[in-house]
Length: 387
Ligand code: SF4
Image (tube, rainbow, N blue to C red; front, top):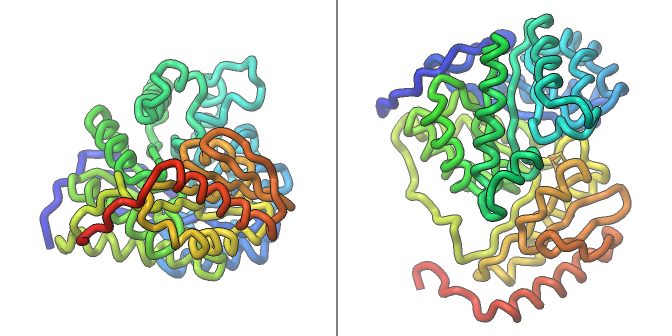
């Protein structure tokens, strides 16, 4: 075993576990079933709990989702977190049934536009305090607060994420709510490393939840995540982790197995050489899927995209495949080619430019056309590594 000096973070209790303050790094995951389907959701919550998840997160986007929480709570011993997106007020309806609330600073502006974000955070923190819940301030590269983005150069994606997280911490501290963790996620492991290192330098006391968002399918998704975790955990950064993988519902516990295996390797000093994702090869990012997926054909599509594009493996091109309209449009902006899935159609984008919506059985040939064009524009493939 290697000796890693962990950052002196605060202890934050989440149900039966405590993260931070040197406690074991807890792996966590998120359900991808429809939250309102109590039987399926409970089945997945319990499978993740049995696999060793310290916390299981569930998306709550509507009152109907919220109404499923009492039955889910009654059917599991797992520590539960809920994921709030645009409708932050749903916190009040579910907090009594869970142990942690996650909010995304970049989604607070959607509702009650005239109300300052500070008021909304105070509301969420008040609900958390009244219901014995922890909080996560979950900042995501694809949905950073637009007001923060405006303050930074267009090509600086890290500055706005960092500033957003720091100002939320400051507000929570000011109002005396310190039972929170922070996450700063990106699909690029190098950015995850940089933003978390910079945050930890400024706030070594705040526990960090680490993750590479839209890491994709195994094994690539696990490799990308491993790169980020190795660099951060070996420097004492990180108190809880999620490995986000695009896998079918019955395989979700693989996220916990992957997290445990990466953490065990780091603890034993089995750190692999860092792969450069900076990089001269095809990079496919795909979201891990969650209850917001609108057409289950998304998982199969992500696999088909990977197979179909194999011929382009030596070209430095990024293709993003996202499961829904909540985060899909924003999170495909930085990819060369992006697909985000709606109920009946798949939306295709080239960078931030929309190219149209295509039926599920028509999207692959269209994607191939665009990929061929991009390859023709950019010229020959890079020299394969080792050649
Ligand atoms: S892109 Fe949509 S479906 Fe995919 S994980 Fe994010 S919220 Fe869920």
